Image (cartoon, rainbow, N blue to C red):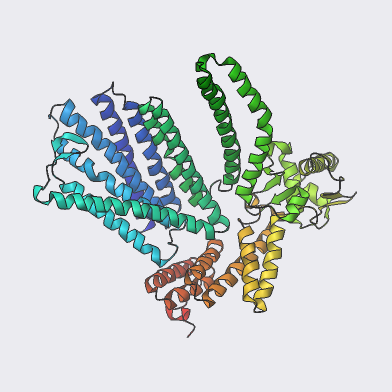
Length: 600
């Protein structure tokens, strides 16, 4: 399908989905305006509209990624289900059969949800780059298809009343095949459940081997899954205390986290915000659980034991408040350390010694005492930029004239001299707010120049370059074990290009290009090491990471084709060769014949 045709089809499906949502909402309101399910119906249509809209956005921006189509079609199926539910109810029960097609709408509704559920293993297994981890995972997709077909067929011809319209028998039901259809549906449901869990396991395994951008993308989906589970747990509590309708709305309201996270991950918009989001969620979620637990134990639990009603436990409430006040700050510190470990991993010895670290691969972040320094701590954007420039200079002395021109181009030197002094003081205050070290411990300043002391200030790009240099040296010397060890460390540190938020700043370009070229060398060496040990899946994964960084790397394209073809994956090899040819045509480079991918 051509890109223009694909966009036209995507817009058409989105329009149908929106029309179904509007019509379904109208039919539900007209059909039973006093129904307690009305709020849930409105939430239902709004929730699955997010699937459709995010899917449309991905299809337009990334037409080569099938996940956009999966979300788009999934949202459409659920919107059609909602519309058919409203239409069947109105046609069969409200209008007393005056509208045609009510029974047929109820029949379609009885099985339309099946392909929507069957798509979920595809979504999880293909996320985020539309590639399976290995050929072995194809069997999971085929089992999901078989399970979907079995349930679909059983639902279509199952005899007796339909589940969504108990008083209406299935117009296409077959009494003779009833037992067979029951067994088929049970087997299909079992396959769908098994493949869904297998797909989740595949995500976990993919996360364990993911690096850089792919790891951040998977974090977004994992966070969304955690949000959905938390919301479902909250809904169970709401239902248990006597509000089942509200609980249903809670469950539905949590589902948009999945398409939103998928959209952020694939389109890479605000991708690096996941670190801040996870940190805050761990801290505030832990505090909320602690406060709730204290009050439930002290006010409800102890009050029940001593025979008082919850409303009269004023003294116990005061005790609970005192416990929370005393324990809150130590708990917050522990949670912040846990959040930092979850987001950034175990700190290095240098980071523990300094108490502060700079992360500039991907988004720029200063991590201090277990937490990310908030933006408002900087007082001004120029102070952040000053530190970025000094980090980009890699510890070399940078003249004040250069810094003033970079920060305040073409402004009065007398004015910007004072501004630079203020920015310098702000950087020192951010790096060492408690003044545990001398003023020049992190930032060394003279009358004419400034520089950061990299012996005291850990920076992730420096750690990456050092690990990469050592690993590539071992690789050139033929020491495969040591090379792989250091190269994997380097790959794990590389979370994105240097200062991706400052793409158009000239002072950031040299280090960004150096780090990017080094990252490609690291991935190429790891791919060749994997290919030498016949680890085809790892080799493919590393070559794809090269192409994610540089889509026009002809050497990586042809090496990937060669590895796939040599392992017997001829279809994938041909598909990758077509992708290579397309990329070369984009830049006007002659395309090597397929046979040239074979070293023989």
